[in-house]
Length: 268
Image 1 (cartoon, one colour):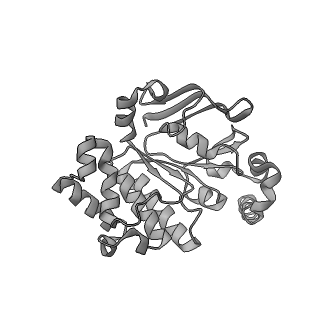
Image 2 (tube, helix red, strand yellow):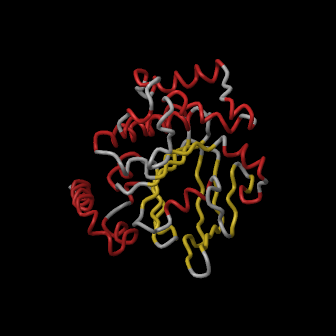
Image 3 (tube, one colour):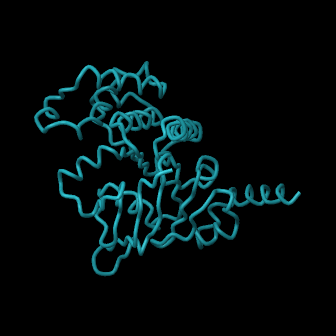
């Protein structure tokens, strides 16, 4: 598979003494499902948002299909961002607008300023939005205002808005952090299906280690702005979780117990 994204010695510093990322190196292939895990404040969100330059890295190179994103001018960056759909923890929807209107906002990167202000979308774009919403199980909510939806439904609208861009990659920043377990499973199932059936690369920040273990092709473990684990979910054990989470590892006692059971079954 082709390498789609590559970080080379990427660092991010806030002010004089706060270093959020330090010399981060990794590459992601087309169609891969990658989860980023780590304690609060480890740099997970900063890392993800450096990819589409919602946050500008301080140094290093971020290569997208061989192009250094950090060197892109405004128009080139706008074009590249159409290939990177973004899914947010708190949805970032316009609550007073309908589901279909929110989804069509995903096409704004392809529009002139005037077309965006006037909301000029083609019949093909509207049909695509309908199709995606139906695939995500939201056909009955298409004309509802977004403030009438549940959290899980809002997140599916957010995914639809990202997909209508026709992206090569989805960047998901804690997409299930605000959801109950049932809604979380629905969202993760959809993201996995999108990766598997549409060949779209998915990079997702997760606080839930069990979800990362279940859904990922690969896990990046981040601690204090550096990658301390980069590998397959089966490589995550008690020792690796301790490296990733440090003193916070006790918060993941349930996952640790599940890992112990798995390792015991492997031994048998």
